[in-house]
Structures are given as C-alpha cells and as structure tokens.
Amino acid sequence: MSRNIICIAICLAVVCSSGCVRRRLTVRTNVPGAQVAIDNREIGVTPVSVPFTYYGGRNFVVTKAGCQTVRAQRDFGIPWYEFPVIDFFVENLWPYEIRDDRVVYFELIPSQPTDARQLVSRGEDLRNQASAGQVIGLPVDSR
Image (cartoon, rainbow, N blue to C red):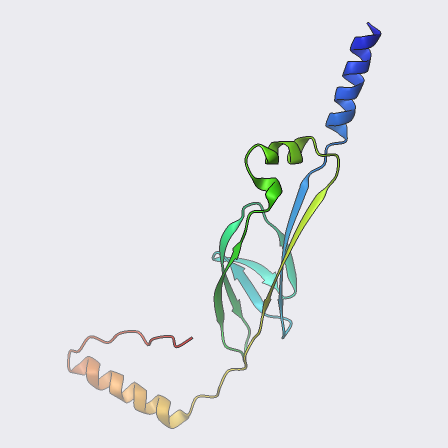
C-alpha cells in the first residue's frame, strides 16, 4: 500500500514539475516604428515580439513611411530538443523551462525621392504603349 502511494507521489511530482518550451520571435529595425508582417499576417510595430510554434522559413515584410519596403525570408532551424522522441520528453518530462528566443534585425534604407520629370516621362510612355495595344508588364523590383 505505501509502495503504491510513493509511486503515485513520484508520478505526480514528475507531471507537476514538467517544464515546457517557450518560443519567442523578436523583430527589430534600425528605425523603430516600422510595420511588420510575417507570412502575410501583421504582427505589430517594431520592436515587436510574438510567440511562435513552428520552425522553418518565414516571409517578412517590413514597411515604414519614408523608407524602402523590405521583403525577406529567414529560416529558423530546428533545435536539438525538437527532434521526434526527444521533443516528447522535453515538452512533458523535462523539469525545466527552455526558452528559444529568436531575434531578426532589418536595416531600413531611406526612400530616394523620385524625379518628377522621370515619373511624368514614364507615365507618358506607358500611356502610349497602352493606346498602341502593347502589353504592359509590372516594373521589375531591383532589390
């Protein structure tokens, strides 16, 4: 009888003391106040932190008035404690909390003012091409 009570007490102690993995992604920019979207979901204004669940590639879009829009992909590798079988023990039986903090930094570049004459000339060229029946493609992003 006392052996069963000890066994139950040990099991409860293990279950109650189990840790977990806390994952946090922080986005920072050299100019604070930039709007950030990850995988087409807006998450806030820099500096901003959000929890995450899955590892792998993420698509970032960082925008701020007066700065060029940054589009980038970052890959987050899987840590050792997330591999199959090991992850079960870490998530359920490991007695400590594991923190996985990932920080992504983006350098925002101020926008270059557009020359009004070039803009008008480009618009006239596009209008002439459209009236001539030519197919007009989108401009190629040089970044």
